[in-house]
Length: 114
Length: 114
Image 1: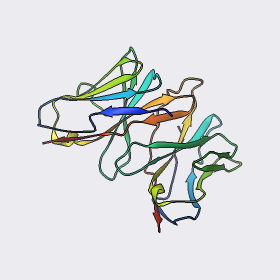
Image 2: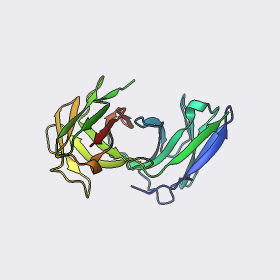
Image 3: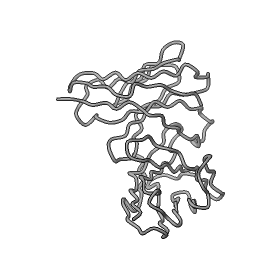
């Protein structure tokens, strides 16, 4: 699976949009981009995933560049509860069974400030 | 939504003893579960893939005789840390695949070996 690069830390003002970048320049055509977050001392939480189209759900939006070499996770209105480590992971989707392992990098520590 | 539980949430044991950690998928079946460990201020490190009805697959550098994994049913995987030592003190997290793309993580088990 392709490697990802994320900034180690970012700050965001409460109520503003948080834009978290991720570089995955070696991504291949059958690899998806996944985002998870981990709030202190808890298990990671799934946020969103995408292949090449932009995606949006109730938590966030995922913008993937046309060449798929980078992506941005957008939290539209960050709250203090969004303070967490955010992980961008690239992984091959192995057909209909979800047995692919997730390899975590160092992630981005997002600090939302009042 | 899909829920994964772990038991116990924390455990303290003496050096040389064994500790069993349970991971359950509460409202879905999982043929594959994953075990991670996380040291303070570090990312999650995948230890092994737990396969229902067959042997676990361990990541390079993980001692299979020390970290025994049993996936007895489609909703339960256990990790036993045998002959625990202080350096095994860590945060252990399991996950299970649900639907096609999403993996859900347990809340983690904090192990302290004295």
